[in-house]
Amino acid sequence: MSNLPTLKIGKHAPRYPVVQGGMGVKISGARLAGAVAANGGVGTIASVGLACDHPMFTGRNYFEINEIAVAESVRAAREAFPEGVIAVNCMVALTDYDRQVRSACEAGVDMIVSGAGLPMKLPEYTKDFPDVAVVPIVSSVKAADLIVRKWGKLYDRLPDAIVVETPLYAGGHLGATRMEHVTDEAFSLETVVPELVRYIGDTVRADIPVIAAGGIWDRADMMRAFEMGARGVQMGTRFACTVEGDASDRFKQAYIDAKEEDVVVIMSPVGIPGRALKNPFVERYMAGHVDSKPCLAACLSHCSYLKDRSSFCIAQALVDSYTGDWESGLFFVGSNVVKCVRMESVEEIFRELVGQPAPRD
Ligand SMILES: Cc1cc2nc3c(=O)[nH]c(=O)nc-3n(C[C@H](O)[C@H](O)[C@H](O)COP(=O)(O)O)c2cc1C
Image (cartoon, helix red, strand yellow):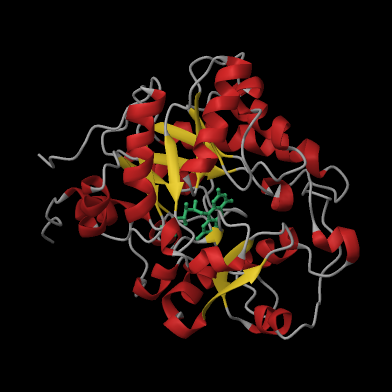
């Protein structure tokens, strides 16, 4: 009924071509991912930091508990709707990246989606799980080309889909090595999506769907992405502020209260820019005052806080935003946060996206 393109990612075909982006720490956990899968999209659990409020976390067993928590989350999301498509988002920049990928695969996940670095070794970590689709997140054709070449040469494997995330509007860490890229139209979806579709058709000569991410809010945005050649969209910010969203109500209230002037881009401890709300914590950081909670677990392979204390422990700051601590949290948002005026249900979002009228009450 909705005349939307069919999105097939490896062996997995959600009813609608809509992927809910992975959002850490714990903004997209099992509850949100399960709800999205039940409504016909791809529900994505963010693997980062799941240990933080796990009952078995002692403060010293972070990596071990993360592994357990990833598997538990996949099973819990699956339980919500066994036929749904469940993904885990694992960030390449994480120290325990390989362990998280394996744990998700062992728990029966359908797809691994990986960005925040180029996932050069992803096929190696999933090789025992041929049904698990592998999906890199890139912001340029150059990055996609590097992955395609390397995977072809080393693993004889192609990506099952490629997410193009534009740094111009997306939430969280941005696929940009320099601040200037964040406003550079060369990284817009309008530029990169058609270029990547052409590259896949002409150079790779394969059927790899492109999924557009960053700044997509409603059906009109989604249809524009399809006109550019995308066969799916990935959305983060709108799903973060849902009834089913795993974050605290105070996190969601910060989204509802956000105004345009509150959205800023900062250099994250990972060494790449990230889009966030200008709360007291970010304001202090932007003014050059670094205040940080102690390192949670050396969770990043590159961390400027661990290296020379020039930034802050991002894991702790993200956990604080998840619990809604406005003073000390790092609230990642996409530019579209200004469109959040209330908490929606996942079902409402899908009805709007696929063009179904809301049920009459
Ligand atoms: C709060 C928040 C946390 C995020 N965390 C992650 C993450 O852990 N890994 C990742 O690859 N992307 C992360 N993202 C990016 C989203 O998955 C998604 O691609 C992006 O938000 C899409 O742009 P949109 O917010 O404009 O819809 C995050 C985004 C937000 C808003």
